[in-house]
Amino acid sequence: MYNNLYYHVVKLLNAGKRMDGRGLLDYRKPIDIEQDIIKTAEGSARVKIGKTEVIVGVKLEVGTPYPDTPDEGTIIVGAELLPLSNPEFELGPPGIQAVELARVVDRGIRESKAIDFKKLCIEEGNKVWLVVIDICTINDDGNLLDASSLAALAALKTVKFPKYDEKAEKVNYKEKTSKKLEVEKEPIAITVTKIGGKLIVDPTTEEEKVLDARLTVITEKDGTLCALQKGGDAPLTSDEVMQIVDIAAEKGKELRGAL
Amino acid sequence: MAYKKRAENRGFEETRPIEAKVGVIARADGSAYFKIGNTAAYAAVYGPRNLYPRFLQNPQKGILRCNYNMMPFSGTGERVRPGNSRRGREISLVTEKALLPVLDLEEFPNSVVDVFIELPQTAAGSRCAGICAASMALADAGLAMKDLVCAVSVGKVDDKLVVDLDSSEESYEEGNVADIPVAMLPNSEQITLLQMDGKVTKDELKKVLELAKKACKKIYEIQKDALKNKYAVEKVL
Image (cartoon, rainbow over all chains, first blue to last red; front, side, top):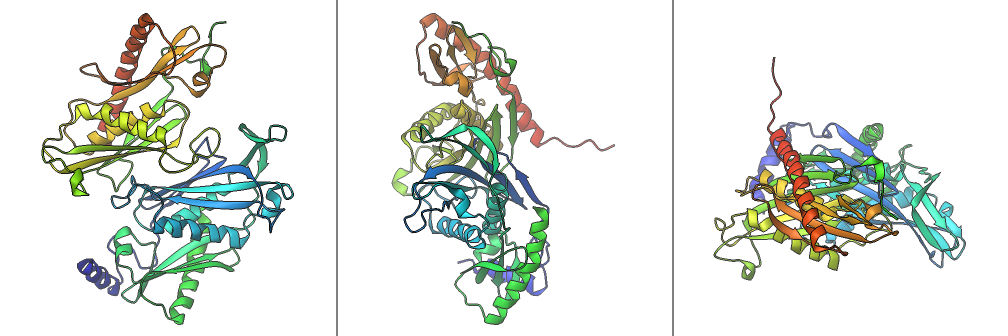
């Protein structure tokens, strides 16, 4: 569908260049993180990578635990690819791209155990905190996955619990307590994209249109891998996978530095 | 009981602090950010662009489509469920009617101008903030416009006529509250949005519309400044 664009991008990559002048493994700079930007949310952050901008807001709700984990709260991640952020996004319920985005961000936080679900328990078997993380895109210039995952982590770090009124069995959102949500791990997502046999990071929307394959690697601070997601139509060799994991570990440090 | 003092020592005819900026969303043809107190709105304009499905097209002129949406974490209390709500749809409709009179879409048959309004944070007056942002975004998109559109809510809290109600005033419990969102074309002084929740006398309505007019003219200056600022050139010595 984008044959000409594909050949153009590949030709540049073969010469070690990108359309915006970056090197293959360069993130756009600066990576800008602003925390606690939404007063109506219990936690929030805005991340800008180049012209890509996402806002993440966290709301806390009280609900009943799952029967198999009566003493654990949970997280719920939602993503809205707002039509305001890209001419190709449409109104309506989340499409498959939004669902994948939300699930990958969810997996990073869940599997790294960044949040101890047991600490979200209010009353075993009956009441637990639900941490609802909503991702909203403001401007999509590619790499929403890495930006959203970073914004979600930055937002979680600012969460303060609202007061829970035991008698009324309701959350009093007007009163924030000083109790902060403990974020025990730092899962950072790095997506490496393969186009014409070359590996690049932080793709723009144009590069995403012509990608052959991509692999998102979520790592913790010590380099432990906690989630993976392969996308794109083309396969990856196991050598490429190992190469991507190395790139992700390296780039993960860079993004951690921005946080 | 009388309503004596507003939060943050605000005068009864004073709006909350306003911040405005255009060109905030690179992918959009036009965009703006408008913040009044703790209510913030983004607006993005896409178009004029082809309209599909084709049966929606009007061969005589282009159409305007507005969509107002609160982000899930933008409400003061519980999380707002994403997606369509009756409230959102109604606000989208009245926003469209508020903006349409300044546009000339006859140049763009079979096309659509899409305006997406997103609220990251709200505390009363969100439809007005959305309209202010949208009209700036339309101007930023370079569409020919007869005027900008300025909007503010006015009303009555207990015995006082007020401009730009905040959330504590909207839910004031010790007396009656009337909330009247107004959108106005600042040059011709015509009204393009008018709604009311609450009770006022004919006389009060007349007075309060005067207050809205004054406030809208102030907002107009802020909007114009923001549009000009996009093209401001730093002075080189």
